[in-house]
Amino acid sequence: MRKTRDNYEIDDNKRRLNLTVIHRYLSQESYWAQNRPMEKTLTAIENSICFGVYLGREQVGFARVVSDRATFAYIGDVFILEPHRGRGLSKWLMRTIVEMPDLQGLRRWILATRDAHGLYAQFEFNPLVYPE
Image 1 (cartoon, rainbow, N blue to C red):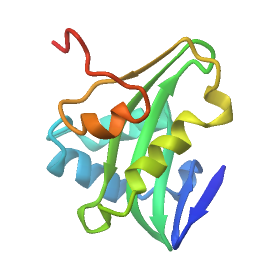
Image 2: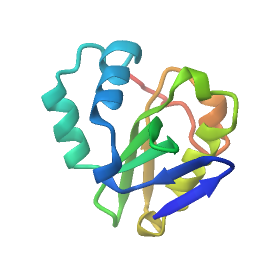
Image 3: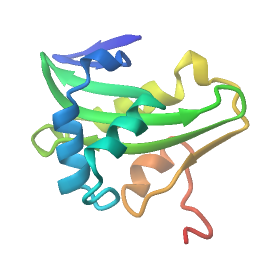
Image 4: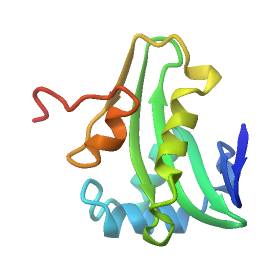
């Protein structure tokens, strides 16, 4: 699955993922995966449906979904690199994920975050009642 808009592209082909960019952002810039070892990032990617956001060959964003493709999906590790924010890429990425044909008809979608609630509310995600 590949989608293009302006000069950007979203692709679910794992072979295109820039593991260095993903790991650097998650382990150094995100609040939720600080100091995550590369091995954990690789295992998470291997066992997830992944979406890369690209400007040409440069990876500028990422998200992954853990799902049984029948009843539930968990969205995690969502990011757009700072220089590319403010262009609607996160909305486009979320829309691409929730509209993916393989993920239709699920009973439950889960997304746990402490920020960006305004973005996720647009896709009918609500803050967790008991996040702890």
